[in-house]
Length: 411
Image 1: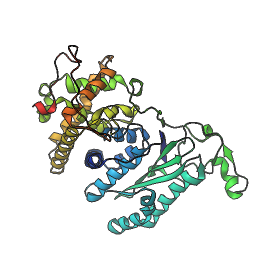
Image 2 (image 1 turned 45 degrees about the horizontal axis):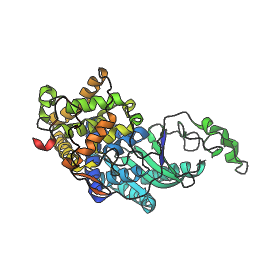
Image 3 (image 1 turned 135 degrees about the vertical axis):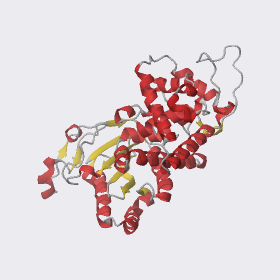
Image 4 (image 1 turned 180 degrees about the vertical axis):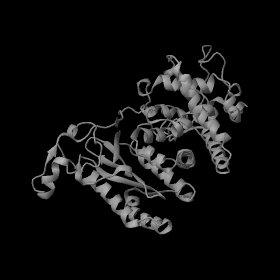
């Protein structure tokens, strides 16, 4: 069983309707694009990767390091994908609180429509939750359980636990492809901040314990696992140290210092302004990037900002244009015309090529400020309200580029 986890600061609050709707539309488009291009197995592999999942949440405009990414992303995908599950062949069950308890009924309903073994899927759903909530007692109690299943019967689980004492949440990811046993080392690892002594009944050394449960075996966390870990900081703002400046700089250079019409492979995107091209480049990487490209999820918040205003307000006009372009590419792909989807794929390829020869410049703070200053042009919103045009700064205006890039809506 491939498995990973992420530790996140525990945040409270709700996603405003204007963002939730856009997250559902863009999230659904990204899922469909992955299925069309790489298949359903590849989608599950991505969902089981804590870094990719966090990057997806960032590109959709959620707070970049918040525990709320899990609920909001899975809700958005469930609303979007389940409306048209027959086309991608993917179904999403469960959710937070009461919704998680509906997972068995939802799985049985899906089984009735697809011919899958519903009882077996329900069994897998319950056991994956029991393992993370009971068999491995690391101080986190589950409150989110989402089960993603394909028409082939492959599945992934994304679930999250809460530790109210240290105000942290831990997200667990499961992938069914190499499951041997739920009760003997089903994880490749469970690691993170040291929680002290924990109870792990899935460890191979716990066989005597399972036959005599009164003599519980405790193992040190570092003996349980060796695996990727994603532990996010407490600070709300996105800082220079949180992103790979070489990767981010290449993406921004592609969007703002290269004329799209000069790149033959991107001619079908001609007319798209620099700001939307910036978002599309990062969305393209979420769809087409390899696992090593998601080690700095905060970078993807430069696609559509964050609802809390970090690193900048959500540019709703850019967001809507991104959704429209993605939707059109998917529709034409279904008809066998892949020119637009190939053009979008080329964005991540070209950005990667540019990155090889790119030398990072000390631009991070200036770029964040530039995005905030221009947010009003792009319909910037946060949970606190709409952004307004800033007052003039005087004779010394910020100028990051040799020429001021035109906005998407100047064209």
